[in-house]
Image (cartoon, rainbow, N blue to C red; front, side, top):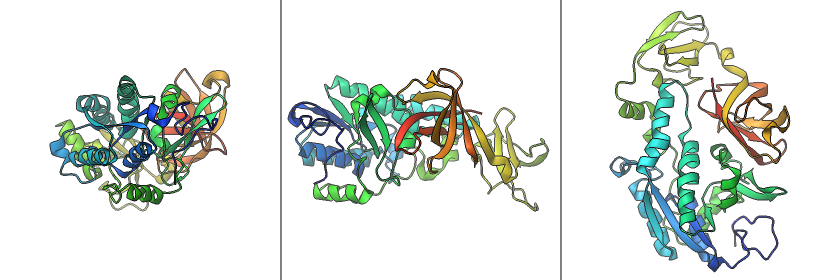
Length: 383
């Protein structure tokens, strides 16, 4: 039988790291209605823990019900409730719609219109799930909160550490870099040690869960079919103002119907023909409503300024002028060697040892220890 990831601890502790029987250990499980969090809840319930399932209603059901893969749509709430009923633990639905709009959706829209490429899933973890929901778990008297994220929590010399998932293809560390040390002390990630998603689905089938074959959500939950522009038009009517497509010298090459339709690194859909070499979007100037294009070489970046840093190293960030690390500047890219240089309390510059293309403001830059699975935090890329 597969058990949740155990912290390196004496055998007198239970599988969640507490010196008491599972029945006396209350754990709130954040349940999205998908297979991952459902397996976490079912597994902990079977092991005898005092499980409380909580699902967040994050946005309007009427709009969500028409979208099959939305992470928190009405069907997903129903699926989470069915899992709780079948495993015999209480389940609550909390209305976080206003919180989600204020903390995630509004910033997403404003950042996109300002020419950035935001990552709302990170903000949702940071500002909703690991902040408000975590406080709710404490209010419910829970000893800890568990989620279905593919990431590992391991005990180190100075306390709990964040590590990549065993299955690197499922690893979600990029989306969890802003998890603080205090939050990490309270959180548990029982799936992080599994070798594949097939193992998770096999567990779901063994527990008889109806979500065992449920497809994974592919999109941001409030962005159906990945159509960012349609969502922005709905959230900010009239914001898609036309402007110029210019080269790096400022010469006008064409017109566009709103910078929200463009992202750094984009090649297709520029409407500029008859050129010997293709052009790419290399910058966005929201104030002047300009889409700046240039050759592929212009996308290469070696110095990346960061703000709103979260540092998870053992020593303080400013205790040394440079940190040799590895970084991800996109969720889909492997970590690359870099040097981290602190420039303020929560500011830094990353120097990439080899240039990366398509580094975009609004994306996250996540830090990893060299030759290790450990996550050292990260920051948000600025201009």
